Image 1 (cartoon, rainbow, N blue to C red):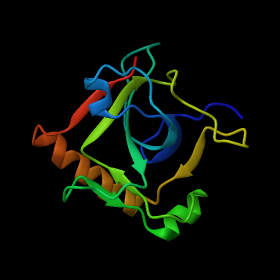
Image 2 (image 1 turned 180 degrees about the vertical axis):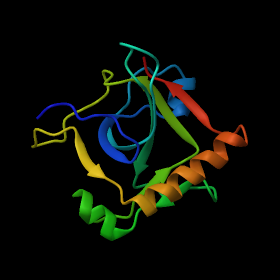
Image 3 (image 1 turned 120 degrees about the horizontal axis):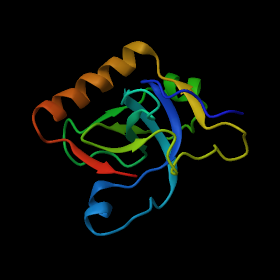
Image 4 (image 1 turned 30 degrees about the horizontal axis):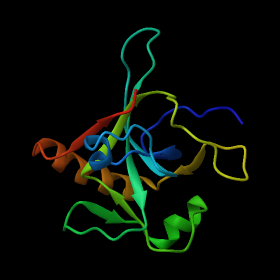
Length: 143
């Protein structure tokens, strides 16, 4: 399957690098995981868009407000496992699309799981925006 168009709300398979790992000098993500495209910014004629993705994790957040739990119905819609999962909104990876960390989903020919329902994506976007506006969002460059 072809690489999808990078649109906000699309959940992709991505080798996510956590911000604390980046600060410690690590250059590669330790595992591929679902990640939500929260921003896709056009950079001009012929230039690839700049993408911001937020990671999905099974680890419960250790601080209030840094993550939004994914409802089981949404996980089922995307074909994700049945364990509880959260979208972390306090940090993200930024890269030019498609970047070298985009991965195929195991045992498929796809790079994406599909789109989040609009109402749920709006919750994520608003929470991310609050962290960004407060200057507390941690961006990790991936190019």
